[in-house]
Image 1 (tube, rainbow, N blue to C red):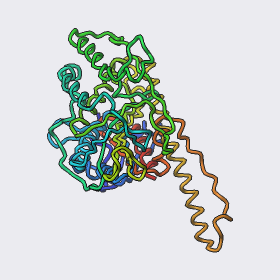
Image 2 (cartoon, one colour):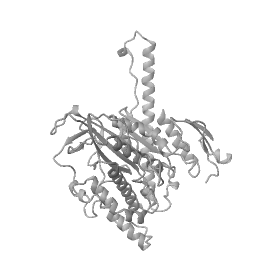
Image 3 (tube, rainbow, N blue to C red):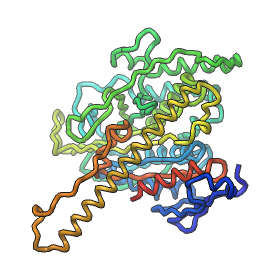
Image 4 (cartoon, helix red, strand yellow):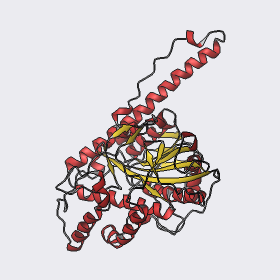
Length: 459
């Protein structure tokens, strides 16, 4: 561990990184020993409330106004991403997600829609005769029943950091001419495959259960949790998994509304208050930990995506029908990107080295593709700006007579993350990237790559 931090804030928007290694080692690296980086804002010693107001609250306001939002959290392992997103245990330490849920439901209090609805694709909803049988109340009840087992298995872990009592009282203005409905979903992207963290785990003897059957087993991961609890009680240290785990990967499909791609077969749970939403979130967090533990005996490293979908329905809409003019749907996705540290720093030598190397390879690939997409878009922006400047310089020249710039191909399809959020990269909605840096006990080289990635994203 470094005795002093190798990163310091020069201002509210600028930081400087200084390599703590010796000059002999420094000659072997291509990373500059001193680098300066500029951000929209640097948070040093800020409390969670201030951090939320500056980083995520504008996205929540946009969501309520009908605009899509995307928030990325990026950093190496142990850099504080979980604390930023989920928060801590003490009063006032609630993170971005629980505060977002609080603010949304504070804002739409008294304006909830009672219509039976379900999402369709990315940006549509439709009336149904009855809603999905797995209600948010069921999630909350089962989560409460399993809380003792969660404590036993995970102890003082980040799973317990979501406090129901530590609420954010902020309420934003909304259009009272509309009524509102909210759905949440939670997935992870592991080895370039998408898994639903709110759906059931298939039994070992059935790899293709119908969706209607997985509803009754939506909490079946708690059976696996019980196996872990039993293993904990017996002091077992077996290297193999105690339970055979079968999960079905979900695919991406073009949304019928033409707005982009969505996860086909994803469970989206309708929630009516912040407590229900937090219970669903906590179940997803537990499932992610259970899946990782059963698969590899240590927590898996994956990208996690929690999405809120908000529908606004005009109060004047007829009870039995909805027109496009009466409805608008917006969504906010919070993405916890897995760190891209080297395999030797990711636990590959502990157990399941082949699995860990494959994990690291998939993570690095998705982050590399994300960087390539950002680089291609930056190049295209510069080329289009150059054409615009040329048109301004030649006022009499018609735009059609100018040679169109050759734009770089943006490789969205090379990674599930970029393919899923392609609509954001081409200008649909607002996006924020949060960079977490721990300058004490995480590697300088890894954090230097994180900072360079952030600089590219900002451009």
